[in-house]
Image 1 (cartoon, rainbow, N blue to C red):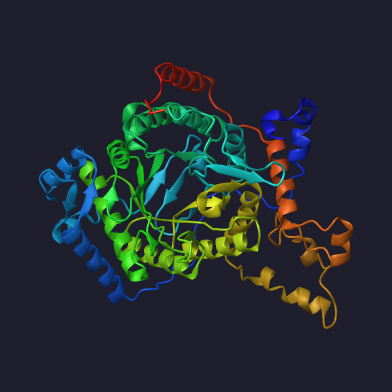
Image 2: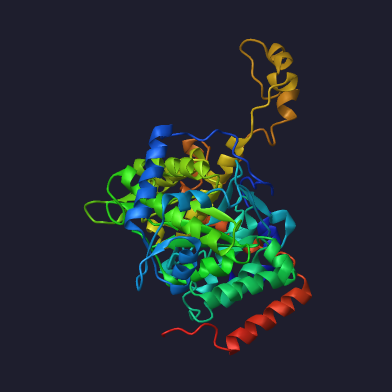
Length: 515
C-alpha cells in the first residue's frame, strides 16, 4: 500500500512510527572527503589523453545539432563546415577556454541550510534519477507513476545524506510529457527543500523550471541570475554528438548562471573504443566541447565535468557497472577534471536485476571509484538498479546505509589524552573487560556508527526473529520513513504563486508533444 493510499488511522500514527525508524541519521552538513584522490594515470599518460582529445576535436570534430549553437561557436573561432552540423576546434581555442569556469560552485537551495558547494574536496550525493520502472518487495516491479515518484521524494527529503534531488526518482509516466516537468518540479519544491535538477528536454521546459525555481526561492530575475539554484545534466550522444534539446538546455541554463553537468555516455566497446585509454580520450573530447560551448554562451558559467565511462558485456551488449573498468575510468575522470580545475561528477550504479549481493558489491565498487576519484557530485547515489531501468525502494535504503558509512569513514580519528584511554586501560588491566568502565559508559551511545541494515544478533536470536534478510529490513525501514514523513515548510505566498504559474502553464498546454 502506498503512502498516498494509507488509511487515516495509520496516518494518525505517523509520528509514532517515524520515531521508530532504526539506524543512524546523518546530520545536515557539507560533507568533505579528507582523502587524497588516487592518481591512476601518470602525468605523461594524463597529458597523452589530453592531447588525444585535442586531436579528436581538431581532426574529427563533433556534430552540434542546433544551428544557433554552430553560429555561436563559429563566431567564437571554431571551424564550422558550411551547411553542416560538424564543428572542429583548434587546440589553441580549446586551451583558451580552459580555466574560465569556476573551480568551486555554490548551489543554493530554497532552504539555505541545504545549500552546498561543489569542487575542491566537497562531496554531495543525489537520489536515483529517471528509471522508467520501480520495484519493491510489496508490490513488485511496475511502471513509473506519480505516487512512487512522490515517495522517493519523501525518502530523499528525510535522509540528510542525500544533498540534492538529482531528478525524478522514477519517471512519473502517468503524467503526460507535455506537463510532466511542471507537476514534477512543483512536487520537488513542495515535498523537499533541497536543490534539484531540471531536465533539458527542450527550451520551454528549461524556461518553465527556471521560473518555478525563481518563484520557490523568492528571488527577482537579477538575483536568480547571480545565484546558481538549479542544475541540469547534459548527456552527449556518444560518439561525438550533442543534440538540439541538450544544446538548448545549455543556452538557457548557462546564460542564466545555472549549473551544467556535461556527462558523455561512453560505454567502452559500444559507444566508445574498447580500450580504456580510447574511451577516456573520447569522453574527454566531448566534455571539453561542452565546456567550450557553456563558456561561449556565458564566460564563467558554472560547469561540472561528468564521467560515466564503463564497459559493456561483450556477449549481450548490455551495460556493465561497478566493474574494475568502471572504477579505473571513474578515478581517471577525476584526474582529468582536476587538470582543468573543474568540479567532477560520478555515479553510484549497478547492473543487477535483484537487490542481492551483486547489487551491493557493484554499488560499493562504483562508490569507491567515485570517492577515490575525488568526485564532488555523485548522481544516482541511492536506489539505482538494472543499469538504470528500475528504481528500488529497498535498494534506496541499503545505499543510504552505505553512504552514511562513507560519511562516518570520512571522520578523522581523534588522538588525545581522553581518546588514548591510558588510565582506563590501567584500570581494567590484563584479562578484564571495558563494558562497565566510566570511559565506555560515557561514550557507548554514539561511539560507533549505528547501521540501518546490518543485523549483528547471534544466529539463534536472529533465527528466532524469523531470519530477516537485509532486504526485509530495508522494506520495513522505507515504510517507516514514509509513514513518518512531514513536508518541509513553504511560505504560503510562494506556494500560491507557484500553483498559479503551474495551473496557467497547464491551461496553455504545457509543452507541445507529438502524442
